[in-house]
Image 1 (spheres, rainbow, N blue to C red):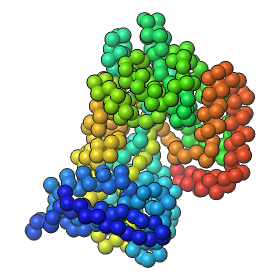
Image 2 (image 1 turned 45 degrees about the vertical axis):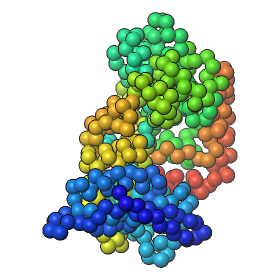
Image 3 (image 1 turned 60 degrees about the horizontal axis):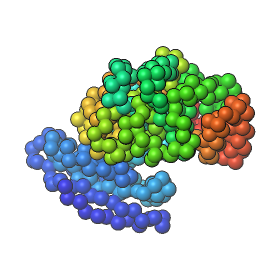
Image 4 (image 1 turned 180 degrees about the vertical axis):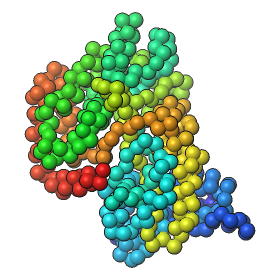
Amino acid sequence: MKRNLIVALGLFFMMTGVVFSNGTAESGDEQLGGELTVLTNAEGATGLDAAIEAYNELYPDIDLEATVYSDDAAKNAIIAAKVASGDLPDVILSVINSLTVDLAKKGYLLPLTNTGFQDRLSDIEYPLGWYNNDVYCIPMNLSVSGLFANDDLLKEYGIADYPQSLDELVAICDQLQKAGLEEPLLVAAKEVNPVNAFVYQYIYQNLYGSNPDWYADLLTGDGRWSDDDFKAVYYGYGRLKPYMNKDALGLDDSGSIRRFASGQNAFMVGSNFGSNIRIANPDLNYSIIPGPFNETKENFLLTTDAGQGFSITADSENQDLAIKLLDFLTTAEGAGVFSKAIGNFSSVMGVSGSVDPAGDYLQGLLSSGFPTTRTMTRTWIPGIKEYMKKGTQEWFVGGDVDTIAAGIEKEHQRLMKASPDFVESFLADHKFQ
């Protein structure tokens, strides 16, 4: 694939653009070919690179001129400049967030509802891709949280099925421990993400599962961190504590990955997909499974978050071609190519296999419509994660749950006063569910 480097200067940002080119369309072909301009980040460019190559094997070639931004600040600056000049690209491929809704509100994006592409997706919610009951952004991939399972070790100890609830996880860990596996469950409690991986998934499955407005209620004052529903998180966590590694507070994420890769533990509570596990032990037979932290059968949900989203601008002169490309990207073939290229899970039904065999089980669930958490967004007020980490670590060493929950509530109130714009923006976006 030929690539040419384009350098664009604007609003004091230097952006790198990549042109993906594969030749010209064959004459007489009824399918669409031509050139599209796109604004994306490096991850999206990688996925499009692979998808365009597959597309061009089937249809006349698309020449794609991609301006690649480095971060959200650069993206926002580029879009602001292009809105001002009336020169938005044909396609915007980026993480779905409140900017998507803002562009839709102002009429800069094309409604995609009548395409029906949203009906090809897994059972996911992405309210920031919608406005006034129309969809303006189609998610291409998903980030997923779950539990890592050592398949070889489970087989060795006669465990045939993955746990599907907190009760089942506790029972399996107890069975493993009684059979001689001293620490069935591995937790890295030294860092903010892994120590709270259980906490967040419990919240998404149980608290959001019972009340989709849970976090919005905290922001409006209709709920508090010191309420019984949040304190249940630590009571649930406590049921697993007897089966955890004794050095949890001194273990960081990288150390946890190395230990799990060595085959010492049956399960690991992790904060990412786990490609580093494969690097540490290429031969380990493991899977990522839905977090079995649910208290009820109804809340056995897979925690997901929409990743890259595909939008078409309202004034694009190449809308038909952009829709044709999106049509391909929402097929099992096109979606599979895109998601595997960027190393993440596909949002499209029917996709088989993952970038790593460890993800095949989860991708199969997603592709068959497995239910996911009903969260508006996995976004938290700036600073609260550090206090959640502190509270969880205090709990690890025997801290009182009531005191910890009250402390998080106090800090959350302070953060809301310090970040009123966040509260206003979150609640405004929440109305679109």
